[in-house]
Structures are given as C-alpha cells and as structure tokens.
Image (cartoon, rainbow, N blue to C red; front, side, top):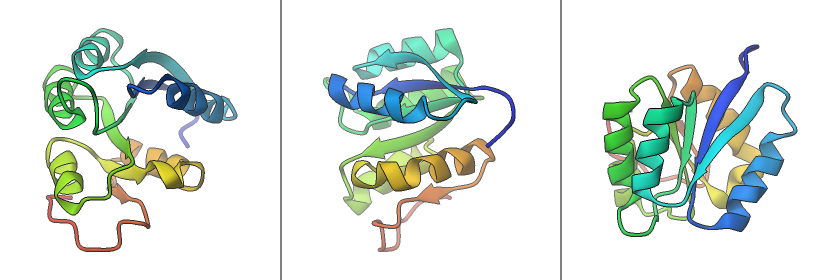
Length: 141
C-alpha cells in the first residue's frame, strides 16, 4: 500500500459489518476509517465533506442504491476511489456498479482475503474483481 495514510469512508447499512471492516482495517497502520454512512444520501454528503481516498460502498442500501450513490460520489468527490463491497454476485449488478464509477468489486464473503488487494488496486487506478466473479462482466474496466 501507499506510505501515506489512506482515509476510508465505509458505507453499509449493517452496523456490525461497519464494525468488522473498521476492526479489519485497523490492523494496517496506514489505513484510517474517517467516517461511516448507512444510506446513499449520507454517503454522498460525507464523501463530499470528508473527501476520502477510498469509499467502501455496499450495493444494497436503504432507499437509494449504492450504485446511484457511486454516480453522485463520482460527481462530488471525483478524486475518491470507490470499491464496492457487497454480497451480490449478480453480473448485471456488478456491471452497473462498475459502470457507475466503482474501480473494483469485492464480495463480502471474500473480504478477509481480497479487501486489501482490492484497495491497493483501485487506489492505483487499476480494476479489481473478486475471484468469485468468474463470469465475464460487461463494463468499461
């Protein structure tokens, strides 16, 4: 990872998952969770306010999807990398998430094995897909 501190915004509507991600990332001295959001509107607001280096974004949020949040974050905090972290492996959802501005997509079931690699890739501007996504994904990666 990069030597400077990586500032992360965690967006998920399940508080125990937010806590898990914060604990997982705390093992890395150069990664700091700077905020949490539980819905798309809050995610967009916090991304614009905090300007994180990385937004970890769930697809399935209340009211507005993470895909729509990614589009808005891309407009309001264009320097923030977006890595989707979701349970959904539906190819249409993955494609829509990446097309909306996600630099990568990690399945939650693979988070402990792939989150660090996904983070490193999207922060360097490289695409990343979980290994569990073995079918061809249609997007502009």
